[in-house]
Structure formats: structure tokens, C-alpha cells
Length: 425
Image (cartoon, rainbow, N blue to C red; front, side, top):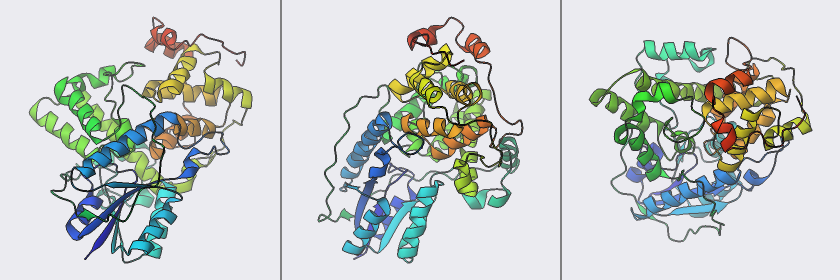
């Protein structure tokens, strides 16, 4: 009787989940677990939590949907609260699991957890690749030689004509659960984050909506710099971030669309954005803790510090810059910002207000529904001039950006960007 434990983390789906598929084919009994870490709710020394209210709501929706999907296959999702490594290790000790399935992830905490688990149970842990488009073995360079810029990375990938691995289907069946293992009592979030809905079904529905139902993908390059609304971008990032949607599934559907409907600059540009995501994942794999250091991977000290008043004005949307205020109020209320808005507010915090970029990155981590550790900290380093950018820091002319992307002031009016501006300028 082979017993398996599936530890869900950033792979909250049953499609294209190699760890789950491996356990399904190898075990007679299976326990599926997700662990809530109490530290997610505690503010760090950058004055932000790991998990804010919008992200928490999206997470609970995703877990609820995962539970439904598992339940339909005769399984169940066990939710425990505690230090993740301790919870999983104790389950293994108490119930004598023969195999432990987990999906690899570039985050430093996530990798440490897996390393410690492998050290403690060396013959039992099976680590699967499912977070990135490519495996490390597919990359056209050794990881220590990862290109210093995205352009170099993209050209290396495209020159080799690398193809993402095909996504795995949903397992035909799952082993029976171990009924003696129960979930801890956990408060479910009832916060609404419309129009978002967490979970695998909603993620795949949004992909179908953007590609097959509306064909909005055909104009993605022209519309991607919008500030508000739904269909100007793919909106897939939230489901990709917690693994409700597989990036390989997105790539496969995009390829199918190009082969069967149309291939143009916009369809390529969505793949281009997936490559940006990919680049940051492998950069974090390689650089580890330096992704969170003040000097960044460039080892260059920014001319910034921490000004509490300036940071508070930025966070609350009371700076002298209406377009920044509007974006920050949108972020606070909805847990989301467009890519253009993220660049503008980051540039403002760093270059206009002179605040240490890590405070902004930590606040994004708390607030953004689609927080991805590699993309978030990689982009903040990029804007601060300490990351993978040959031009150095990126400073935006906020008045010019507002005139270009919000010429009639609709975005500022919608999110009350003119309200209570401070005198920090």
C-alpha cells in the first residue's frame, strides 16, 4: 500500500500538474494539503504584510475551487495552519508517507523549504517542474551564465527555437484519500474582488475569453498600455501567479490560436510577455537573496532612503501627482494595477520621492492579486536601476505619461487622483 502526499503551493490546479500526476500513477492512497503560514499576516520591517486582503480573497477562492475539483475525483484538500515545513514534516512522520510530491518554485523561501524536506526525507520527495515554460535543461545556457539583459535572453531562446513542454492533461483518476487526516479550522474570506474570481475554472475561462471568444488577443500590442478596464490586456497574471493556470497551458493555447486563427504582432507580444515572466523566474533561481537586496543584482547603491511621510503619501494616494494618486487608490481598493500604472507609481516612489524601492516592492507584495515574487522584485529592481537593465534606472516624466495615457483625465477622475494632494514635491 503506497501512500502519497501532494503539497500544493503555487500550483493550485489539477491540469498540467506533474507532481499530482506522478502521485496519481504511483500511489494507492493520497493526501492533498495546502498550508497557511501565520507569518503571511504579519508586517515586516518594510511595513507591509506578505498577504493583504485582496490576495487573501483570491487565494481562498482558488483553494475552494481546487477543493471542488479534487472532490469531483474522490479526493479532498486538507488545509493546515502553521510553519509549512513543520506541518508537512509532521504529516509525514505521523502517517508514514512513501512519496511526497511538490512543485519547484524560484522563491528563496520555497526553495529552502524543499531543500530541507529533501534533506529530512531524501528517498521520498519528488520535485516536479511546472512553474516555468522551459526546464533548466532546455535553457541554451548554464544558469550561472544567464544573460544580463532580457533582450539577450529572448534572442537566445528564440535562436534555439525553444518550445515549451506540452501541458499534461487532468489525471484520469486519483487515489483514495486517507480519511483520518482532517483540515484545521480556517476562516474563509468573504471579500469580493470582482471582476476577478480565483481558481482553475475561472483562469481557463479568461484565457478562452481573451483568445477564442472575443479575439482581443489580435489587438493586444495596441491596447496593452491601457490604465483601466478589462479587455485591454489578457488579465491572466493573477491565475498564473498562484498556479491556478499553467503557463505552459497558456503558451499551448496561444500556439494553437496562431496556427488556427491568426498570427500577428499582438499574438507574438503576448508570448513576449510570457518570456519576460520566464526571464525573471530564472534570474531569481540564479541570484536568490540578491533579488531582495538594496543594491540589487547590479550591486549598485541607489540614491534613496526611507521617508515615512513620503511613503505614506504614496501608499495612500496623496502625492502631488494625480495619475500616481489615482493608480494607488485603484491598487488599494481592487488589488490590481495595469502594467503602465505599475511603472509610473514605481518611478514616482523611487525618483520623485526618493524612497528605498524595497518598501514599494513589499507593498505590491501585500496588495497585488497577481503578486509573483520573481516578476515583482525583478521589475522593481529594473525601475530602481539595480537590476537587469543596461540603461540604468528608468525615470518617467509623469506629466507626459498622464497626457499620453490619460489625455482626457478619465482615469484620474475615476479614482479621485486630485483628492487631498500633499506638498511633498
